[in-house]
Image 1 (cartoon, rainbow, N blue to C red):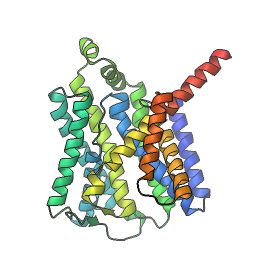
Image 2 (tube, rainbow, N blue to C red):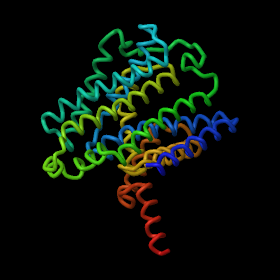
Image 3 (cartoon, rainbow, N blue to C red):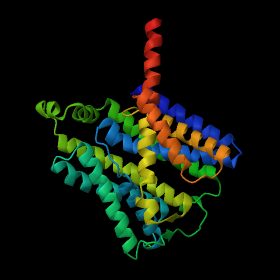
Image 4 (cartoon, rainbow, N blue to C red):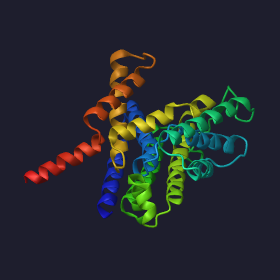
Length: 319
């Protein structure tokens, strides 16, 4: 645990130094988006990587956080920082509700994945149909540049906010790697019946995992709303955020601490390269994501982080 905490602290210092020294808006934007996607992937990794419960509808929690963040400020007059906390709590409550319904009836595997996808689609349709969410038009945050309003004049401020949220996710993952709850969660992932036989309550453990995962995903949705100052049902509950989260986590390495960050960095570097080479061709980024995912599954089933661990083991063995 001490090694993990030291590595997280070193990573935070490196990112903060890079953001402070960089004068390029393009570089800061790339760094911000990489940290943001790493946050989403880390949130998804808690449930899928550590818990073995694959979700195709994490946009459900992303959108819940995004809408609470915007509505709390525009309709409720709540401070943006407090709204961020409310967004995470609302997403956590949504995760607990979905988990209670799903795990109570023993849904797992493809059934659980499809149920989460269905819940996300239901909320998307509901958001299109009701007026207070802006219906199909969406909602906009008023422009009020100030740190107190979570609106920064420079991308460096948003890099700092994304870094803070990602550090929280990394600390949760580090805790799962070394805590009793994390051991129980991984036991349920590996063999639920065996875990139950030794006294683990699979329902309670999986419910705690989806609640943690949803809270962090909701924080990602709130961050998106603050950066782009606009949200609509397609953005909030559409498949894009779910796809980004699961692809980055799988490419980087499921059930690892640094895998989601590695996956997010690789995917965004590839997206930037394809954008420079081929321009704004619609859908090309999804083609790249799919191709990378297929290659990783075929040749690096443990992801980038798993491949790095394997190389380190081989190197130590030779030594």
